[in-house]
Amino acid sequence: MSVTTNLNQIRAEITAACLRVERDPQGIRLVAVSKTKSSAAIAQAAEAGQKIFGESYVQEFLDKADEVHQPVEWHFIGHLQSNKVKYLRNRVSMIHSVDRLSLAREINRQWKNLERPLDVLIQVNLGDEESKSGVSSDQTADLVREISALPHLRIQGLMALPPYCEDPEDVRPFFRRLRGLADEIAALELPGVNMGELSMGMSHDFAVAVEEGATLVRIGTAIFGARN
Ligand SMILES: *Cc1c(COP(=O)(O)O)cnc(C)c1O
Image 1 (cartoon, rainbow, N blue to C red):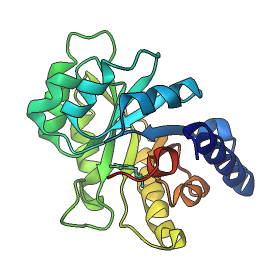
Image 2 (cartoon, rainbow, N blue to C red):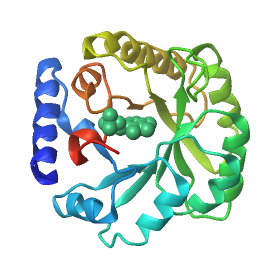
Image 3 (cartoon, protein in one colour):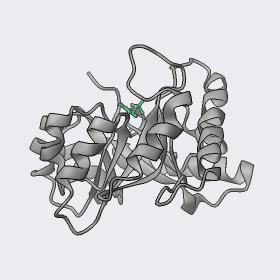
């Protein structure tokens, strides 16, 4: 299957999921997760109309971004060490994986002299899985409040990477919880905090995520094929 065919198929499935729950497909942005994939594969997806690409590893991202000449937008979605934030400065339009104050402070410092604040999402560890990044659900509101005081980044919502389940229906409760948490935080009406974006859903479960309110779906394998 070609990247173009895969993209068309995914777009059709997103639209179908939207129809089931009466959502406007325009409200969902597809992030093509291109980690480990070549710049040629990215260029091919860009030629097919794909605009946003998600990367997880800083050095790999820097190497490939220089080789992609289409006007694409880059989102950083992986675990991020504070000492690497400087390399992303002015090169990404969103970071989905902000999960601690020290990281947010470093982003704030790096974006200080730029024209626009950086859009960020707070990554929540819904299953309290030890192996995964993310702030726990019960500490999310406090972290959002602390980060909201930093002027050079703007919280736009939440992101989660729920436990893998063979049956996507088993992930539905996690998606629902992320949405519920975003609603709770929105109700606090913290100044400068937006909870409109929900980054959730990957190749095998994005249709369920869309039904549960995802606004950003992060899809790799279903577009580019399996990673080695
Ligand atoms: C790799 C990755 C994805 C994409 O996973 P697929 O199953 O290949 O669609 C999505 N989100 C994050 C954070 C990832 O690291």
